[in-house]
Image (cartoon, rainbow over all chains, first blue to last red; front, top):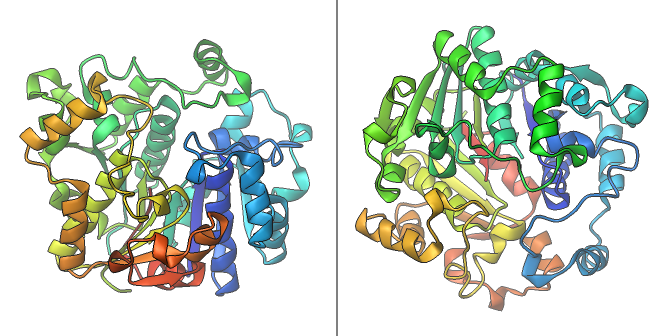
Length: 139
Length: 139
Length: 139
């Protein structure tokens, strides 16, 4: 078994994406391989402008709205999603976009942030990575 | 360790169920064993008529409503949940229904689609499978 | 690889917490080690009074409200979250609180139920446990 983390990103919510990228980048920093498989609502975040449009889960974190939460995150020196994504790529993480979701949503590659995406794949791509992983999660 | 995928289906939303069955059937097609453990809202989908009543997560996929999404899925030749479930069974996947949830919901076996269910079990059944799995997910 | 279950508790909903603790306590009962890593909305449940304030996911279980669900759970002899948490601790489970979330939420240790928490940690703590686990989940 490889020393790998594989995460299915099926949720598009900002806080779920934070959890994903923090775990992903932490895994990379500790020498692991990482694949993120974006599907359904998660895939929307890979559309052009998609990362800025994230919203929080329905429950407010300690009653904080999105604006206040961003402020607190900045104060706590938590990097933005954009920055975490860039870091993820720099550290060698791989991003796979679900082709089926693209078809359902009527998206072509030009709609996507192609420079972030390593591969347009189907479930076989995911399983090949996941069955060889120590950490498998679905967000 | 076995070559197995084990998924806890705790969510009843249509898109989460799609992710589950696509991963499950993909795993089976690649020669893995698969167990799905339906609990809480997930279990509702195993009630008679439960698969038709699924709803989407609160965020709309690219602004699509449920009807339009179904249409797009059809056009993209994505099988229905009903068909994916039949395929899952045909390929040898196992379905376990959480007995505790049935008790909480006041459900008896006659309320369930018994032909889909291999076992009515408790958490021990899940853990036995999961600890012997390469891919463990909770949806 | 160790015989361990590691769960990221990123959701604060009552039913997700139930799933977590039932799987966690079942793992412990079967001789496994267990770490729960509380972050984002999950961390709110570790605040003083946090466990009582849980709410259900947006979909109602068989149309049950929270009150009726509690009644049914009592009748089905399902232990309360408080009791499951105590059991988890008694069986030797470990709880890690996400320091980053505490900073974002402006929480100090005095705001937390310190007697439940074994460690205040960052993502490295999680990955060390998770990469050595048979069962890894995110709730």
